Length: 151
Image (cartoon, rainbow, N blue to C red; front, side, top):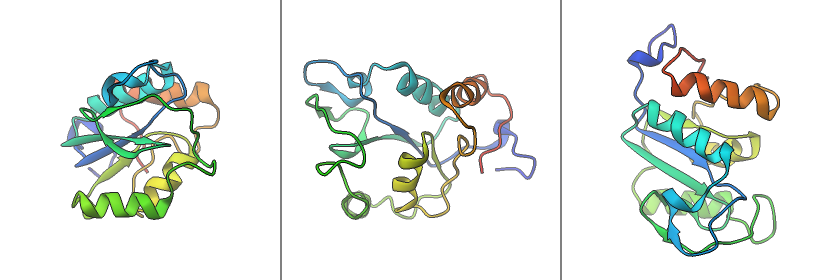
C-alpha cells in the first residue's frame, strides 16, 4: 500500500469477506450461497482490490474458498455452534496462508476480530464507519476504485 492509501497502487494477497444470513436453500458454491446485499457489496469491493485470493469467513464452516460447495445453515458468529478463533487458526495453518500479507478484512467488528485472530495486522477499511449505511458507502467507493483508508 502506498503512503497516501491510494487503492490504485494497493493489491492485497488476501481479502476475507463475511458470510451472510441470506442464503440459497440448497447446496451451492460458497461464491453463490450468500445472496444478501451486504455480502454482495463486500464481494464487489473485494474484487475491485484485485487480491490474489478471496475467502469467505463462514460462521459455520470457517474459511471458504469461493468454489467450496457447502450446505445452507443457520449459524451466526458468536453462537455456541459457530466457528472459533482457534479453529480458524487451525484452518489457516492447514491451508498454509497464515503468513500472507497484506490481508484485508471487509465486514463488521465481530468479523474483523475473528480475522485478526489469524492476521493481527489485518487492514480493516470498514472499522469506525459506523452503521450499515456508512459501511455500504465505503464499500461502494472501494468498488469504484476510489481512495479509501485501509487501516
